[in-house]
Length: 474
Image (cartoon, rainbow, N blue to C red; front, top):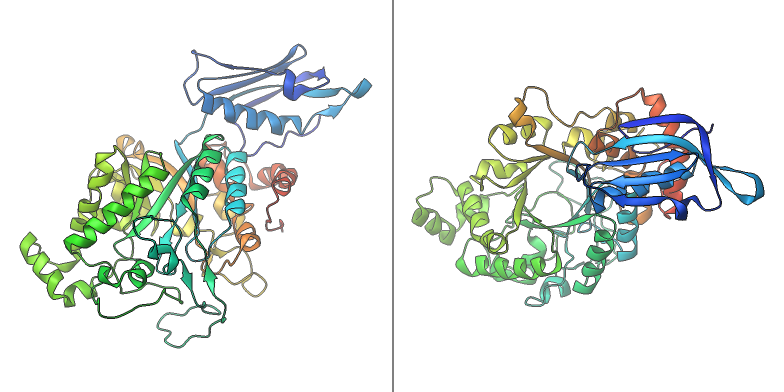
């Protein structure tokens, strides 16, 4: 009997004696949505009489089919050109409802065709969320008809910094190459539809009120120093140039969000909320006046007010706000989903505060960190997260009550692209670490790392078949 290399591993897999011999196992398998299974559960039964896939929903049936296709990889040629499929019984369901990755297309624009391949990789691993980081200081990537300069100006930077950015660095070397691009609404609708066919939700992110230098470069009146013409940021790091808190800027963002919501029908909209300096609000007469009108005691509190104003658009359309973990400190809405990135402990804080939480801690699932020796690996932002560390990641922190644990709704790996210029670099950093985080997101049985590697090695051929680059195993 050949090894059955399924990734992520199903919760229960029993290999029986015998096999099913057939000319076309993919076509002749019976597929059925049934009422006696939970909507996230599926079953695969292969006996000498045939193969049956049953599930509690169409999404679960998709996961069954993905697993079944991997099972067919273990099939052996039989007599007369037929195929012998190993007899197995699989009972499976995911542990978490949010199983995703974040792809930063702002720091370096990535072609639509590559994004579609990433969707395929997400589907291959039975994950169900692709979070697109569409805007940042270094580029605006989504077409907004009401404000065309967001992509005409904000979508391009004349050059990018070369080498690794150091803390406190003030002088930079640049590559002299214009970089940019954006997705039309039709591009994004195509990505959304392609993902939906595979049971994947696209979560768009419009990062605000910080990380907005590209937008301010396009429309200076959005900034706190409107008489100063900024450019799209050419270095990495955090810009002090944030949105002002004027009524006109609030309405600008609401208009942008209405167009974004029209493109993305999913239930979640990410509004960022991370790394928002308040230095300009402290120095702005208009911001100080707003602070006094609202009875706020500190300029930093303006962020929570601003987010609440623009989030009214989400409430109008019955969408749910997602934000980075700094949002917990800004008196954000209680129903906001918090993405814990600064540490796992930040996820604990958010869960204890009553928020649903997606665990995405930088110490475990940041795929812009090195995987090996920095002397031989491609340039990265820093840190060290090899494949085994991802595989060992525990999604639910210790120390939470049972109720608090129930608020951990899933996990997500993040791919920030400051140091990844194109698809090959992104693929190298994403894969096969994606395979490891998929195991933890699915809730696959934790086995010795060597056993995981044994399943992963043949799985790499499936990744190759998608046309994606990956880091070879050590």
